[in-house]
Image (tube, rainbow, N blue to C red; front, top):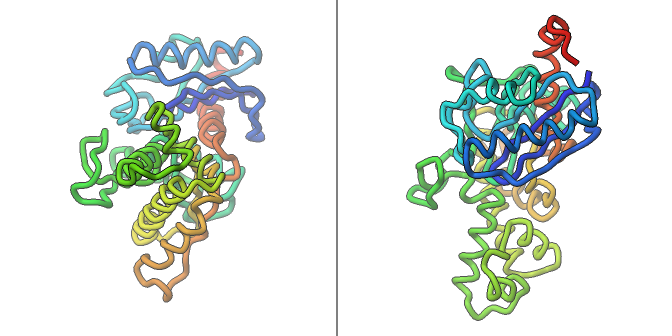
Length: 323
């Protein structure tokens, strides 16, 4: 059975056709619209595009937000338009197939546990660094959801009291200092602090400040731009600080770093590991979690939620005779 996984993030809607071995056979991508109706149209269009080319049986949506226990409703999504919205039913009506929801980090964690970097781990955490930070915890291969289905919301741990404002309504959240968005913010702050500096980023920002994106900062850091490297070092510091908190609370065997920013891991991960090892409680006197990058890369959420859709939809598909 082939299924479609859709990663609905704050920046893009990415869909993929996935087989039972976790391989992504075909993909579709579009920018994330701001409105609720437009967002559901974009998801439906991505699924329809892939369903026109493949015989698919069910759809899973990996959502960057709070998903209800029954995985039918999006309760809250800081970077998306949905608020207590029956998204699964709405999308199912659009595409004519069973639809299930999952938190995007949970989906990625499930994929990495079954097919990738967390395979075999009894206690595994995933930190998905993209527009924001998503978090997931697996215990014996099963998702820990908390009492109301919204745990663990790692990206909104407050690391910096009275720090940068966050769309969630708080200030100083981890993702405001360690994400693609944070990388942009840090670079812009550094440019303002050093107005006379002559770097690639500085020259680009003079033409248009919107040219300073997280992806561009990472590229400039690879090219040796000193300001971009400083921004990347700041991200590494806050990643290490946050990982220490995760280890203090959950004591995982392995922490998988996923999301789009993980593609630039060679620029920050070693420094983050060092920071984590230095500030975790009991530093020097306890085993440390293995910090690994996601083997499935940016496709982990797609693969994971497509797998969830396959497992939950198979009996219903067989009864209904849907293709």
